Length: 230
Image (cartoon, rainbow, N blue to C red; front, side, top):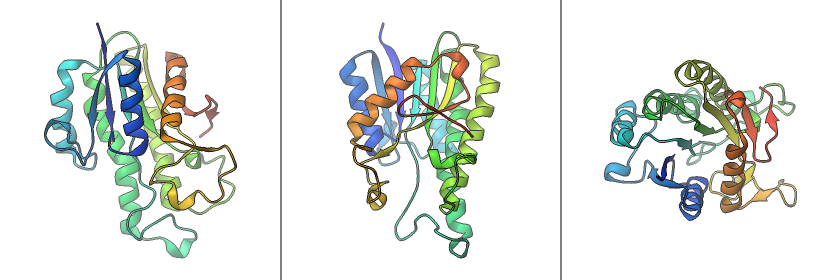
């Protein structure tokens, strides 16, 4: 019997590549959800009613794998703040809404529809810059802080969900710098060989997920399997 997977954010570069890779591998039946999709494939992670409705539609499939491939770094003329003077309350709120609150709402409604026994994997795309201990350059206030909040959400979710299913895995994944619209304005300083295509990133992330065990739940891992400290 084919297992079930859900990719949320499936219209983005990494999300679309994850859908394509999983379908090519054939182990999972894949459901693709995104804000830009219509009908039953629509989800807006900043709207709890939309998240709840999507989860209700997906509940009968009892998924073993859910990957949240969403994130916000820039939008229109807004981008990462380089200095304190650039802070703006509305942009900070928008960053937290997409990068931390949205994933928490997805977890609230989608974790309960996953299989309640056996290995299950719930992953959200995080970022190395969300690591407080790794922050040596400063800047990027909203993105750093919202991803740090996401990492704490992941840790807390993992602790609670282990009580529901001791073999559940809830993790954050850092994909590296991927050649997508999210990273395009910031690719100039990426070292040679470290700008990944979306297809390669998808394979790398799925390989990391495959190698994880329940004892890894609550942690953040990079594309190469290295754990990222909070």
